[in-house]
Each structure stands twice: as C-alpha cells, then as structure tokens.
Amino acid sequence: MKNVGLAIFIILLLVGCENNKGFKNSLDKAQISESDIEYFQNLVGDTVLFTVDQSGLRPDAISILNAQVNWLKEKKFLPITIEGHADEQGTREYNLALGARRATAVREFLLAKGIEQDRISIVTYGKERPLRVCSNEECWSKNRRAVTVVGKKIVE
Amino acid sequence: MVRHSVLKFLKIFSFTSILFINSSFVAAQKNDAPQLDMTVNRGVIKPLSLAVPSFIKESGANSIISRELAKVISNNLDSTGLFKSIPQSAYVSMPLSFNTPVQFSDWSIINADVLVMGSVGLKPDGRLEVKFRLWDVSQQKEIGKGKQYFTNSESWRRISHKISDTIYTRVTGEGAYFDSRVVFVSETGPKDNRTKRLAIMDQDGANFRLLKHPPSLVIAPRFSPTTNKIIFTGYETGKPRVYLMDLSSEEITSLPELKGMSFAPRFSADGSQIVLSMTENGNTDIFINTLSTGAKRRLTTNNAIDTAPSFSPDGKSIVFESDRGGGQQLYIISNQGGDAKRISFGKGRYATPVWSPRGDLIAFTKIKEGKFHIGVMRVDGTKERLLTTSFLDEGPAWAPNGRVLMFFRETPGKAGAPSIYSIDISGRNLRKIKTSSFASDPNWSPILN
Image (tube, rainbow over all chains, first blue to last red; front, side, top):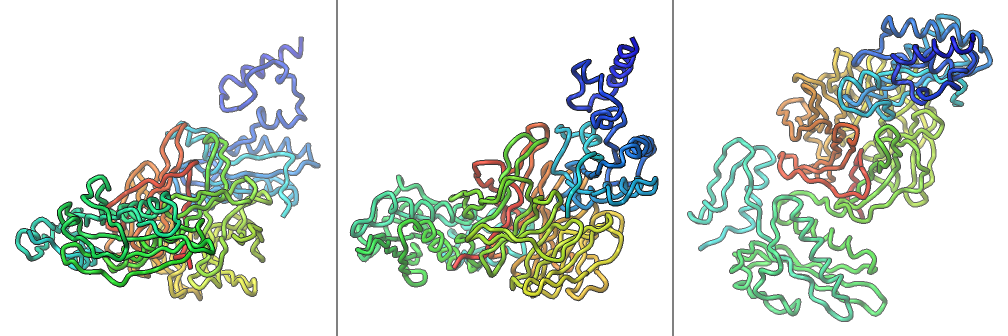
C-alpha cells in the first residue's frame, strides 16, 4: 500500500515535469530508490535553467541546487560533472564561454555549500548539445541550462 | 557595334571594392566610351560573357577530361558573378587545333567577351599536358601569355583551378583563390544528437572527404597558412581543448600548456603562433601560444568573455570579441597585450571577427533584433556593411584573395541544419556550396602550391 502511494505521488510530480526524458512511461521506474542516480536526475532535479545571456543563479535554480547538495552530501563517493549549455541564439565561441560561466556558477554554489572540490569537474557544450530542438523561447529556455551529471568525472 | 574591352572591365571592377557602382556596359557600348553611373546602391555589374570550349584533345587524352577541364573553369568563373558562360550549344564553331588562328567572328557573333582556348594531351610517361590561351574577343588580342602545365591525370581538377585563377587574376586584377581547399565540420544526425566530424573539400565543393579523426564533437578547424596542418577544438578528453592535426598523417597532437577549457584557435599568418581563448574558473581570456617552444602568453585579464581572436596579417595585432562593455563588441589589442581598443559601435552584438588576409577589412557576425548577419568593416571600425541576413548566419572565413567570404547558415526549427555559403564582399553573389552532409564552420586554405 505504501509503495502504491509513493508511485502515485511520483506520477503526480512528473505531470508538471515534461522535460524529464525517459521517465514518463512506467510504474517500475517510479519504484526507484532515493539513492539511485535516476532519483537524482528526475526527482531532485539535475538541471537548472538560466535567463538569456545570464549566468546568475535564479531562485528556482537555487532551490534545485539546495536539493542537489542534500543528495550529494549523502553520496560522498560519487564524482560530479557540471555541464554548461546555451541556446542557439548566439555565436559558437561566445556560447562556449557562456556555458562555462553557467557551469562555474553551479560549481561555486556547490563548493560554497560544502561539496568537495575534487569531486567536481565542469565542461561547456555551448550550443552544441541542445535538449529541445524548436527555434523559439519555449525550447531556448530549456536549453539554457546547467546539468549536474553524477558518477562522471573528467580526467584532465 | 563596338564592344567594350576586357581591360575596361578591369578598371571598373577594381573601383567596386570601394563603392557600389551601377556600371552599365550597355551604355558603354552605345557611346563607345564607358560611362560610370555611380549610384551607391547594390548595383549589378553586367558579367563578362565567357566562352570556354571543351579543351582540344591531343595525343591520347580522353574526351571526358577535355570536357571537364572546360566545365570546371566555367563553373569557377561563373561562381564569381563577374563572368557568365555562354552554353556550348550556342557556339557556331569549335576550335579544332590549339595553334590555328582564332576565328574571332565566330565568337563575337555570340557576344563572347572572353574566349578560353585549351588543349590536353597524354604524355608517354602518363602525365597530362594542358595548355591554354586567353583572348579578348572584341580587341582580337591575347590577354597575357599562354600557359602550359604538366600533372598526373588524377590532378586534372587542380589544373582547371589554376587556369581559372590565371584568368580571374588577368581580367579582374584581383588575387587568385580557386586552387584552394576548405576545411569544415560535417554534421549528420538529428539536431539534438549531432555527430560532428572534420572534413575537407576543394573550394568548389569537389573532392569531399572526412578526415580520419574519430567521430565526436569537433569545432571550427582552421588551416595553417604555412604548413599542411589544421588546428581545431575537440572533446577527446570530455572537455573542449585545442588540437593540431597533420593533414598528411591525420594524426593529432594537443597543444601544450593548456589548462581548463580551450577553444577558438587561429594561426598567425607566418604559422608560428596560435591565438586562442582559454577558460579558467569560468572566465574566458585570450592567449598566444608559440608553437616552437610551447610557451603561452596571456593577452587579456578581465572578467568578461574575451574570445574568437584573429591575428592581423602582420601578426602585430589581434581582433577579438568581448562583452566587457555589456554586450559582445569587437576590440583590437597589440600582440604584446595592454589596452584593447573597441572598434565596433553599432546597435546589436558583434562576434567572430576575422581579419582579411589583405589587412584592409574585418569580417564579423552580427546579431541584431533576432537576426544574424555576416558583415565587413574597415579595421578602424568605419564603413560597416552587412552582407547577409537570416535566422542564423555565422562564422565568416576569408578566401585567400580577401574578396570572397564563406560562412554557414543554419535553418530554424526541429529540422534546422547548417550549410556553407559564399558571398562576395560587395554583397553580391550569395551561393550555397553543395556538400553531401550538413556543413558548418568553413575555413579557407591559402592558395595551394
């Protein structure tokens, strides 16, 4: 009974959360435990969004990042890579630099909240890896993002 | 009717690099003296009409090559917008031998201004021997001297390009650019999961080839002006980083002394240095790397995004983009660092500046009111002219003669994808380069040896 209740709760959560790829279809996925990376990706939220041309953290981003911090503190062994992205409304090089600013903003937040420095690497993809493909603000707002990828570390 | 001569065309054409001139050859013909109608709008030069008969076959050459040599020359010269080929079906005669006198009346009757006569023969050692002569039909005079080339038969296209360069240079007075290649990024797959690979082709889109480099994310390859190398940004380690590739082996090496993330590299004109941007702690600045020593020098230090640097031809200055003043604008800085001088002041954002190989102009991408443009301005920032407009035009690249630009244009939406285009710096003659995949980030080689 408890499980069914949790499943319904999770489904309700997901209704307003359409950009969570691959998490729409089944009850089994709703059975994931809090310690799974999928839980982090979809229920904690691995993605924070940014305003056009900005790399400052918005209030919605800060609440997600606080949740990330709580989860990450329980998982001290997991490395993290923060990917910074931009929308297509900018030139390639500028967007690479902008993505780096965004990833850095998230990194600095996590560091300030006590996540260990040597766990975190950052990478920018600029506009090279859009999540959504339409050419209007609906997609662009989802593409201006920083994604905290758990379990991945870039070796220099 | 007295026809204008090719030499008059040369005078008028060289004028247009400064002004847009609505010159009318029709008027010139009527009055027997060229009249320049100097309206400063996008006037169209009436192209010179060009006859390029199939090359005369000599000793053992095959007819495909004799036809294709002429066709590639026609296509090259037509692509400039300054020439227009008369279809071979309109010719009243075909030359039978390279050395017999030209029947000018056969060419003036079809209104040819310029006649290209060529021959191709196969030598006993397997090499092709190609000869050509260039004629001013109205003056019944040869333009320059005939030329002769020897090559192995696989390289016949390069001979066509070399002949095209000679014709273009003799008639317009401008530098050559046809015997050159373009390195670019070949893109395949859906917009949210593109595979981007390094690729190379001739300037006219022929001989397309993917480089051996494994498929991954690559960005903006650029030719070395002096060696058979390119430099590009790749994600081999998971982060953007600058790499050199030797085009003969297609082996890659990473540039030393780079920390963090590095991208937007370009060579200096002498090939000895790389200017690039590097991101440390979220801040992107400009650096110069000396290839022989691996030494790295910082040029900018502020907290803004400083990127997309490009050397002046003399290597003394670097133009780059920075958002230090709020939005993206263009700045010039000495190769020794110091204060940067802002050169762009118009409304909108300016990005990806590239110094012309002639030194006179800077090409750039401009974003204004949601549209992207390719433009040019003088080095002091004056005389800005926008040449294109679309949803997304980006990344200008100069032809070796500094008269033509390539760039890429991306279409919007789910099916949106990039293609490479070229345009004359006058703003005329926008052309899509045919490629067998989506294509972006073009960079033009110097003239081949």
